[in-house]
Length: 320
Image (cartoon, rainbow, N blue to C red):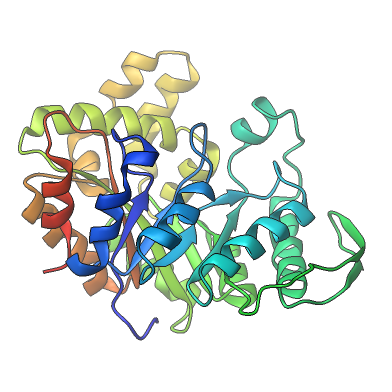
């Protein structure tokens, strides 16, 4: 486990244009935050917010959580990682992952093939390239002939891999030393830790709705959960965690095309387990439960929440 108790926030922050987030990001170290982890799917890319944050808050560790390994070529990933490593020497973690079949095949028209092998190959390529080596290698899922970074970063970034089920968690521990996961409850952390082992840093995105309006929080939470837990890799993850019976009715309705019915089939207690909601101070204490359960680095993601004062919420979510 990581020796330092870490406390992270997900960038970019919701509801504020990226260019207007300077003061909020700059305040994070003084509030006790140690990390900023970016997210990337169908909006802002993972690298740009961290490039800004490297200047706005030089004390923060910065990480991508995650950059997909199908939509960018290996050399492109290496060049972008080297750029961030140069902007934040010794403070950047290059987190990669497979993303999902929808994002890879449906959105990008790229075959979602051999995700385990491509993850392994990309980690090995990035490690060699970011250390300044000249890479000529035929990996199982791609090949590189004669590539060298010029210049290579003076301090190569740490590597991390998005991992849900045991195979990927073990790969993350063996090849990166940092595993990134999400959509888990504090009670799930020991199971993931048991697979990762004691020396692998565990990072998890923790979803927070800082509102005392339980009905609104659960309604928002169900929409977000449905978007994720109907994705096969997440469904399989929660089956492994022991929630197969809980999510089966939702999956049945979703597969039948009944989107509204799928939302109605999500139990309230499942939302309460996986989405932290309530007053901000209560949410902060719930995040601390992940630490107590064995998580090294929570990366708090503040979901769009009606009527909140974002700077006030960020201050109240800071470590006690």
